[in-house]
Image (cartoon, rainbow, N blue to C red; front, top):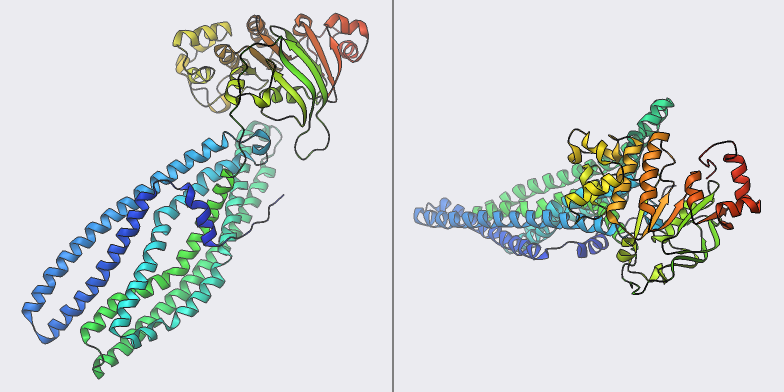
Length: 588
């Protein structure tokens, strides 16, 4: 589904981006320096006038005098120009770096329900392509937007003072230029925003193709994926050509009007000199200043086009920073409740879906108790775990950890209470040691090794080329499934949180790898409150209680043997999956 792209005015776009740019003191210096450079330019034109008039009358003393002053003015202008460029560059680099950091930090606080609305590649595109456009704006375009109007106004003032008649003739084409710029430049912002979004789609397809490379080859999807990617690039190319055509048209009109103004200046100005209405020096000063007047006019359309394109990308950055963030402040219970975890009439449905994933779910888990969650695929088991750590928020009811509603907890402290081992635990493209240290960054080397030994991971880690310093690759691609799970378990062990959530942590492993991980898990689960989405018969039998979910409802609760004796949903699952000698409940 494509979104409608709305075009905003340049001033509104700058107003939205302006508060996000830090270090504005440097920009103030750039403005002041720009005024100084304009003053130097005007004074230099005046010096050319005086020098040329002195040459015409053959006054050598005056020529030497004006040359000395011109040399000092040029030296001052070069020094000020250097300081301006340095300040502008520092402002651009620092502001975009801090903006990138601000956006990244903001995204880490965006609720999962909000974050999941966009493809991951879209966020990457905004943090790379769009921020590059913003950097180009603050590096080049913004400075020109400040400098050019100032230069044009002061040049026009001096030119009117020199010859108001010639000035009026030279600027006759300005209204036409502004009309053309408005007509051709108006849609550029909208087209640029569309282009950035289409490039984000192409980036998403690239990411999906690379991450799904094995599946693509196994199912001969090369032609299909290539066609999809070519289609996305074709749409982006059409947008790009529309932008190029408008910029070329604006540049051609600007060049034509500038050329006409130049010939008018020489033609009419030469006639004024012949008739004695102005001196030759005044005409030379006039021609010198024409560049500061017609230059901005000729470059205005291209400048506006570039500004619209850059600010359209800036709007996409502003949109990210306007996304709602998680509430982080809250309380921490001082006393432990008899129930480590409570669900009280909890309802939940994902945004955009009317069907409830969880409905009126209620149960309690005592401190140190192990509770197994079983049920068919799609019954809401994983969603239930996500609600505990506030990745998502219930639509109704309450979830309490240590007697306090999770919505009232300090978010950092709440998640500090919880260790999670998922079916497909994510590993960062860093070293083994760095991935494990994410469990507790301040842990010592001995503590890291001890956690790995407890997770049956130390032996295989030491067999890696660089041991704990070995890079695991993107998505842990240099490790087997069992090795990745044991690192994830080591990370959870190192965190040593009192509440452990296991989401089918061994379902994707082979028998040998599963046995190693399961042994480590069972040892780690002792003396901890554990909620485990279970498929392994031994885990379910050893659990203190079993909760059975069906279509988001808790339909049964009790011990393994008690539920079998009851002859309900759990007994039916057991008969279908375990009674034939299997040790894993494939239905969950």
